[in-house]
Image (cartoon, rainbow, N blue to C red):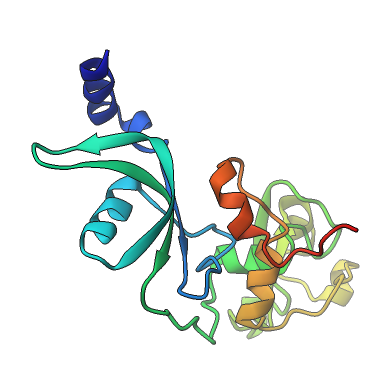
Length: 194
């Protein structure tokens, strides 16, 4: 049985992805909430072996070498603090996160793309202050017209988000899978019930 598990575990790509490790900064907060800071189990084991992390929680499964056995880490904390970036990268993902994964014209949440408020054809720039998340129907309706000419209105004015703002925004979108050993570290700053 034990050999079968090892063979399946090593040869099945799906099995290898089943044991991610939650990565916490030295202050015991996740490096990011959305996407959640996770490492594949191999990276977590390597970092532990190189003494770059402390293992806080483990899965029941273990990996072995001829001379060593180690339970697969499920939560690790970095030994050295990584200073969060102040500047937020202008990416499609961060734009959608800033806009709550909803169209900034109608509020729809499906089939999102992005739209230039001042169209590029009219000199609009690709920047935080001019690009918003938009559903395909609203984007087609607006086309290269101005807001006034399209008859659309923005729900909120686009602006560059602060890194802390995006980090807090990410907490509202938990991933599909949360291992029970992660919960104490993801919601440590949540308000306690009386």
